[in-house]
Each structure stands twice: as C-alpha cells, then as structure tokens.
Length: 193
Image (tube, rainbow, N blue to C red):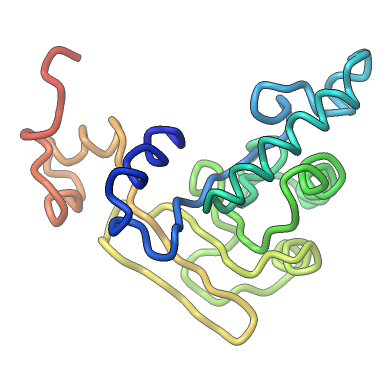
C-alpha cells in the first residue's frame, strides 16, 4: 500500500500537503517489514543484527519519504481488556524492540479499536502506562458516528470509522450506517468477492 501511495503522490504532488504520506500502525511481535527483529520471539535468529539494521534502514527511508509510524501495541493486544501487567509488558516490548528501529512516536492506534476508556477523560493506571511511554495521540474505532474527538492539555483522542468488510455488512443491514456520509457501499463493493 505504501508504495502505491508513493507512486500516486509522485504523479500528483498537490495531493500531499508538504509531502505527507500517512500514519502506519506497527506491531513488533512478528518483526518489522518482513524481518525477524524481535529478540523475545526469535531468540535463535542468527541474523538478528542484520535484520534489525535492514528494518531500521527501511523505516528511515519511509520516514524520509513522508511516512509517520504509530504504535499498534507490540503484540496486537486489546489494550482496553487485557490485564494491567500484560499492558505494561507489551508496552515495554514496544519500547525495547520496535522503537529503536522505527524511532520514537507519540501516537498509538488501538488494536481492535480497544480504547482504555469509554467516553470519559483518560485517567488511571492504563493511561499512566501510555503517558509514561510518551504517547499523546490516541486513535480508536467508533463505527457509530462519522467523527469524535477529545482534546485536553495532555492528549488528543480521536475515533475513526473502520472502512472494511465488517462495516460494509453493517451498512448494508442498516445497522449504524456511517459510511454513507463518505460513499455508497453498493457502488464500491466488489460484487465478485
């Protein structure tokens, strides 16, 4: 996907404000960019240093080209549901295994849209874990409305609408139809699929 966006921006530079490309949510449990970079998952990898160097080179090239990286947690966990200890371990693994390769980020995109709170302001131990890790921008999933944001002096929290087969099915059933604000599902769905 990223190379397709790069090609499009090269053809249509006015599409991209100041060369910006997109925000990519990264995990770490299965390595990065196809390289086995996780010490905890691949302790027998004899090419670990080489794989890490190659992954870091890819990340730097992508950043130089306008891409921004966000955490999607290390292990693609439901951050709002797992135990606090698991959340702490996962965040430490992100800091130890992913951040050194893609660089620091203050952005977190929740796996499964699993936010750490309902609609109230962030507080408590889960928020402290993320705040201490340097995260300030949080993105969840809310397929019930087209836009939702919460901003404080400490963080910005914004929900997104998932544009996927699950949301397409809800749209077709009339269950929380939010995509119709953007496009007609019947016009874009591939009937052969």
